[in-house]
Length: 240
Ligand code: UDP
Image (tube, rainbow, N blue to C red):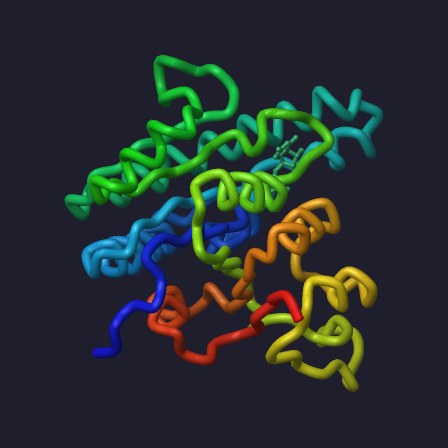
């Protein structure tokens, strides 16, 4: 078995990655499968922090489209990420992993508040830290939270688990038969070509701080370990 090439990573799981084949919400079997892989990688000595999305339950833009105040909708989306974080925590703890959920909004009965130094201490002790509630601010996404937290905790890379896509393509492969798979690209190129890596705010934060992003298919959750071992999986976005 190859050795991990990273010591500390940040795994971004979109809400959709937890959905499995369900049309909405989270599939317990899917979450259990992801939890098994995360525990496996953690047991190999890799420190893992996770930022989880909420799009499988609610997105602020949906509320805004229905006439709701955007900020209110975004806070609802933020709460959806907390639901996912708790489900993931439960699945990890069932496997015997030690975890902590830290939330960017105060919900002290269910999660620790986000405290950077405490999060880093948990990681040093081998605990898996799940960051809930995104950045805590409306008008942002959990991709931006992933970039922000990864930089704050000095993660060596962001692992972006996508749902049903192998990585980054030159166009949407569902719509364009000429869409080309991209193995490696710079942050700058991804921004200029408006490629579906993560949103621009998140991407430019990674670019400014030379933080590599590995984009891969979460349908095969063993990809987490493959990326951690330095295998060529999916797309790598890094500084040129
Ligand atoms: N959200 C927010 N601020 C944040 C992170 C998330 O307001 O810092 C809200 C926003 O409404 C978003 C929803 O939470 O649509 C779910 O997050 P996201 O869309 O990033 O989830 P994902 O696409 O990763 O499942």
